[in-house]
Amino acid sequence: MAPVASSSGSRLAAATGLVERALGQAVELLAAGLVAGEAVILLAGVVSRYVLHNPLTWSDELATTLFAWLAMLGAAIATRADRHMRMTAFIGASGAPRRTTFDAIATVVPLAFCLLILRPAIDYGVEESFITTTSALEISGAWRAAAMPVGFGLTAIFATTRLILARRARDALIALVLVAAITALFMAFGAGFKSLGYLNLIIFFVILVVAQVFGGAPIGFSFALATFGFVALTTRAPTLVIVGRMDEGMSHIILLAVPLFILLGLLIEMTGMARAMVAFLASLIGHLRGGLSYVLIGAMYLVSGISGSKAADMAAVAPALFPEMKARGAEPGDLVALLAATGAQTETIPPSIVLITIGSATGVSIASLFTGGLLPGLVLAVGLCAVVAWRRRNEDNSTATRATKSEIIRLFAIALPALALPFVIRAAVVEGVATATEVSTIGIAYAALAGILIYRQFDWRRLTPMLVETATLSGSILFIIGAASAMAWALTQSGFSIALATFMKTLPGGAPVFLAVSIAAFVLLGGFLEGIPAIVLFGPLLFPIARSLGVHEVHYAMVVVIAMGLGLFSPPLGVGYYAACAIGQVDPDVGMRPIWLYMVALLIGLIAVAAIPWLSTGFL
Image (cartoon, rainbow, N blue to C red; front, side, top):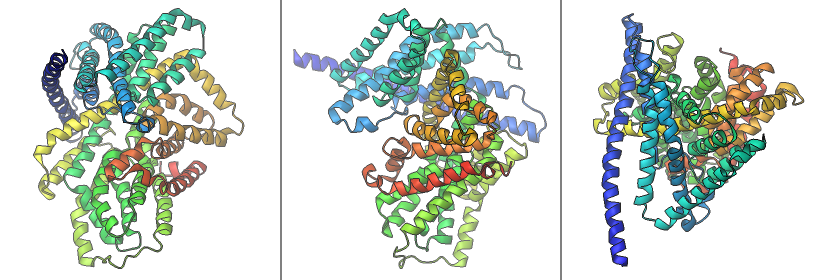
């Protein structure tokens, strides 16, 4: 009988694989088309308004409608590709046999949430169908709202196919039984939760979330499932409210900058613009002791001002510098430590996705955040340079050659179009040509033209995979924002926000103590949750408190972002550190020791930024 069972399992896996590939490729192409369509629509709106003086009254509404579909399809693709953000530090230390079980649990959690939320999502679509837009389009709200049930349905399908194709029936069964048993246990207790009051916050938003996150479940789905349980079992609110809050949180037009800046980051890497900037910087100071380390710091500062994505920044810079740095005797551990530290250093450099998220969640002007983030990043860069100077003081640079003036001029001429891009982006926002969302499309058009006409490295064959990559990464980010928005709403309705505000306001010492507590909290949150979910959860609660204590909102934003960057890129919990190791192809263990001196320098810089508000607000 065993061969029959094995043959039956193989046929099921083969059939599942065919369906999964066909459906997956169709969804990927649709999502890629949506990314391209969003860029075209927003760029057309800028040209029509600023050049032709004939605004397109429908462009923002169409972009918002398509964006909801992009977010949900991207989230489904991220499930298929296992690209949702997860905390895997503890799973990695558990051994291979247990790791496969945890991976199965990480697949079952999204499946469970999607099955639970699917009916409320359908109801939400029906409710929205009675709303007609008031702009030139005059279409039913169901066109946008339908993205929610479709996205949840596709995510459930891809989670199911992942379980089947993994061919680990035992792990899948354990995961299914465990998640089903916990769900049944919570449902059995039912009305008993309503009598527990604030204790429910500990049960659902601490114990349940922490258990899921440390168990390797995707962070966004951990938030979403805990919020669903809280709303369904402890309140009288209909669960379709969760869908509405997620829809509102993840499809705000300001967040359209996320996929568009991710695409821009991929474009500057493909077209050779990043390599041109690195080569020019290397010609200036590459011959000095530690010169290429300074180039890495400077290149990350410049590239961050273009792409807005830390992963894209590191992927653009590291491959261009690491080989030569290793040839000069740099240790792999120190290289990846510096790369991770520069990732934390450049979190405030516009157009940072975290800054865009802060603007969306708290109402702070994104243009002000972009202006305020430049100098704090420079302060942190100086601290990192000081560490490099001390560590490289005995470096043998006898083999390094100094570039001639003619070579520097030649490399500057080559890099000039790339160096100009951050200034083009900033000028477009400051002069009112485009909003912080629309300006990304100007950067995309600029990078594409520069790649085609100047650098001649625009590879059309890579365009579709880049669009799919953009949709996948955007979907994973936006789903976290949507889930965190729903959780933040639940926390607010529970009265937690009032209790937190009262506690923070009664802290002795006023603004300085509030800033110190915020730094400690967001360093911790950055390591556990990453910047985006932490901001969406706690930004709306803490920013009003900061204002009431006389802390400028832009100053507070810089302190919070840098603190989260420290947590995000600090081992052993910070997932940004492991991303840097993957990009640099370095074992994480070898970077653990050298990174701490860089982190101390960043902490000193953070204290300076917190103590001197002018560093954040002096140019507003």
